[in-house]
Image (cartoon, rainbow, N blue to C red):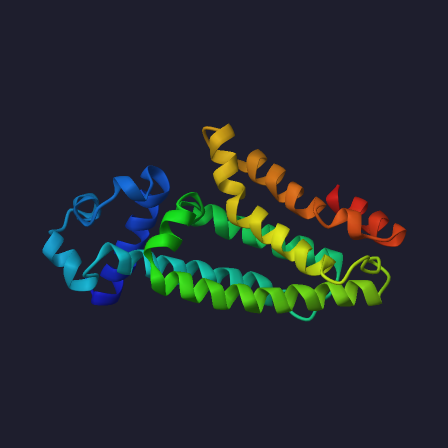
Amino acid sequence: MSKVRTKTKILTTSLHLFNEKGLSQVTLRTIASEMNISQGNLNYHYKKRDDIIEALYLELVEKINASISECEDSYTLESFFMVMNGIMENFNEYRFFLLDFVHIMRDHKTIREHYALLTSERKKQMLAFFQELNRTGIMRNREFDEEHEFLFIRLQILTDFCFSNASISNREIDFDVKEKYKNIILHELYPYLTTKGAKEFDLLIR
C-alpha cells in the first residue's frame, strides 16, 4: 500500500472511530488495531494522535469552504439555506469534532488559533451577507449598531454546539434530528426579515 493510501486509510479509520466512540476512547493503539497494522507503522505516518485530529479538522474546514464557495457572491435566502444544508452534512460526517469541541479547542493550540482566524473571516462574510439582504429588502434595518454582530455570534454558537445538544436528547443523530437542528439555526434569521423576506423564507422552509 502506498504512503498516500495508507495515510488516507488512517484518517478514514480514525474518523470512524472518533465518531463512534469519542476522542477519550480512541488511542493510536486503537486505530492501529482497527487497521490490523502495528502502532509503529501508524507512527511512521502520524507521530501523535493530535496530528490525526489536526488533519481531520483541516479536512472539515476544506469541505465547509467548498459548501460556502458553491454559493459564493450569491446573497439570497436560498443560498443561505443551501450553505446551511451543506455545513450540516459536513458536521455530521465529522461529528466527533463538534461533540468534543471544547476539549479539542482547549488542548490543540494550532487548531484553536486557526479557528480564531477562520471565525474572523466568517464574520466578515456573514455581515456582508446581512448587508446585502438589507439592501434587497429581505432583511429589516438594524435596530442598534451591534445587532448583526450579535446575530452572527448566536448563529456561531448554535452551529458549534447543536450536535452536542442533540446528543444529550437523542441516542442517535439521524436525518430527522439533523433537519430539526438545521431548521432551528435557519429560524434564528426569521425575526430579522421583512414581510417580503418572511414570505420567501416560508416557501423555502417547506
